Length: 244
Image (tube, rainbow, N blue to C red; front, side):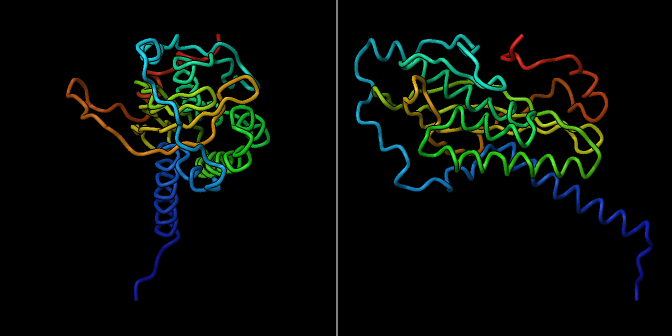
């Protein structure tokens, strides 16, 4: 019969906790994917009836985003988007990026921030899911005595459909989770199909479906940077879209 020493037991426990942390982190990096499952079918946005048809509408859809949101709500949540294709694309991009803002907030502040960007029909379910995922990741990291940062960047957006009261935008993005001394930096590429409705004088998030990828192959210009060297290399950086 094999017996375990306290040191062996502690090592196994630590490994189990790290596996759990990586699993939780992977879920967070993939986005709030379960959010769509919590939305009643009756509350979801029906297919937009007015696709882009005119050259003017197509030009609006292709207009580049200025990057920064026109305005900010509570805790820096994005706001103030134009009621057109460019505004819908910008709103969808910033709502995907809002995950990193939510991660920095306290559990008490997440509901206020999430409710601000959510459509009325799905605000409760979206807020509950966002809070659940943020708390799960934060708890897993805290159990290891570490701290974490979540970085995001949007690579591109595609306006799928647009009407006066709704829009569907696909967003391609990458997220990077860092936690010094806990897990190695890891990235995740994802595509979000974001459904928006025009409410309260702005585009609001009704729903989104997240799928992994497309994920490019890393080039061989440099090996992955891990641990302390990674943290030292990014020290002092702020998200490019953050308020000054």
